[in-house]
Length: 338
Image 1 (cartoon, rainbow, N blue to C red):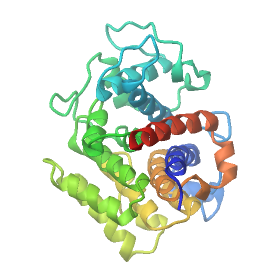
Image 2: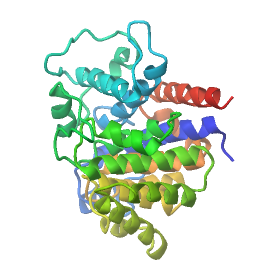
Image 3: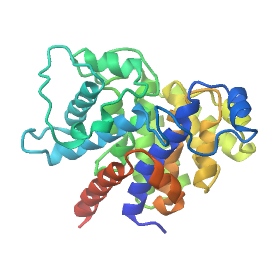
């Protein structure tokens, strides 16, 4: 059985690896993927953004989510401690600056510490329009005061660290971090669901228990019917159909929150083979890097980093940085348990 540290590392590295595997084919059809890479589709890293194993904005924002949570309780000297949602919002503004943009009316003097000081993160990797627009507005969205009606998958694809942090209610915190930029219920409820699943998995819950507890939390929420239907459809297909790209297609294309969650959940639920699960998650018509990231996060939290091919762990961009952030999260969890 993997240790807590191995599960936390598995979740962050698994998400980054799924992201990197899907990055080269994000906008390609399944037909085009098969024509380029063969009948099995893409099965290993190929160059994207000028390098092998390149991450996208999914992993960039995931890392800044983690830093925001860590800085909420233990910030560097120049940063004042604050509540976790505000701290994550401030981290997203630092990410926004790495993308060459600045929020309206904000002080652009960013701290030259933490992730902002990592030069590789100052790179455009397909950032989502909703994230850029919402963060550039100078306002922080909430579930009560929504900035927009977007349900793009930009909220759920970055939420994994919430499940790896010592949150009293990971579902609620996951929703609130996603609602910073995404105002549609399916845009933030999908994030809450994933955060709670991850929290239960790293606490050694069986995946069926983790999913059922998150499903119960989702069902209690207002405006949850659309997201709940997508989750239940994914679970149904996981037990009634052979795992294949054609089955993935029945869940959508992953551009919106509930579809990305459903695809990632389906692919992670149908196998205990990390490579097979993330491969299934990226070979489809749609948002391959985000669905790969979600599947990789769930599988990594479920199986631990030893289950991930070591060649991928070594080759994924910023592997050492991702591992270091994971170790900080795991250390904080272990300290909280002592």
